Image (cartoon, rainbow, N blue to C red):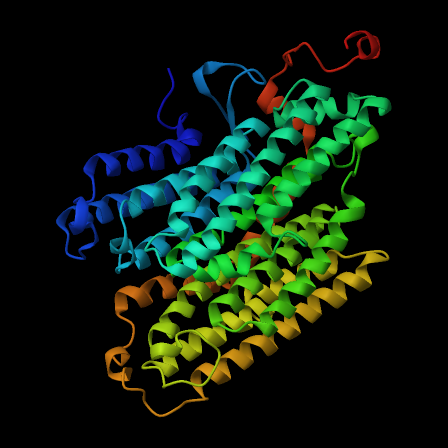
Length: 534
């Protein structure tokens, strides 16, 4: 008989789903009263959503502790054996991403409960659906369900993007929806090509079958894999598929933007799982398929991202561009295709997601205290909390730029140490250049926001009270999480080292997911079937 402990891998998906359904059943007060800040139903929804996120964090930490010793947990829905049924797989990498989701979700939810959730209807239910999609994408063991969870998180993000309405949100929200729908269509085409030539979408099964696809068929299979790279690159905002991100994230509300910082990491995660492992070394004729493309794309993304940050007109857009630059740095490490570089990528991924989420919240706190100027990088009336907000910007800027002893510095040192061969010069140049120009961009922004002051505007009194402790607390939570990475840098590095090694172990993954007697499907192709089967 299965215990609750055995069901742990499915709880990160079921818990937010059940919470979202309960929140929809609870309602939000309905009609014109839905946006009332003192709405009793809204207060109940806040508590229910918060308790669910806390429970999700506890589950994620339990899965992390279980995965830390190398245990690979497989949960087969309906007891159907893989690759026929739906398998959820939690290894060190998945567990790490689940914890990161909850660590970002908690402060984002607390911040939203300060008033943003009252600007529209069903915010908390949508927030939970978003968490369900994110968690599902990180634990699913097959491509089709990765597509399903992509759609779940995207549909929730479409509504969260325009939550609170406003011209800017609608202006950037429509292209965001259209582009994501196009990416979803490409995902289906790419997935269909992969299935046609392997007969499976299970990641463990794919890792075994892709090397068996003979060279004459491999070209079409590789075309499918490249389409998937386009889709994942779009989600991760890799060059040239990044232009949608800075304005979109800057236009949405701060807590939603902080949560969206995770969405680019879904694309990074998918690139690692599919192109780093399934189509990585040992994939036969399709081995190292994206290796010639991934590193140049990533380095160009990092360079262009920091140039965009230098040219940004608002603090929120600047943070959006820094998000692009950080993705470029992470994927550059993935593009080195070594376990040391992947370990560095994971360390930097965790750090950059925390810092970018914190900076999105900070951008709104600063904008709220500058009257009509908002977050625009031009002189305006002084902010009410210059010392506190200035120090937070300095700390976040130093970390994202990679100054010691902050975790951004540690992550970048790990990446530089992992860079070997002819590519090392380019990696060093871009990683160090991105760090330097990030510092320049944030120093410019900080000097304008906190030192280039104009006489008090007539509306300054209305924003002179400063941010409330309820809005500042999420900032401190994220900053504390960043500083914790410094204190526990050594055990975190050991964990990501082990996670990178585990990801590359195809045999152990297949053993855990498929079992000793690997299930036989109609395919993969064998030499004798390749011609007669079609």
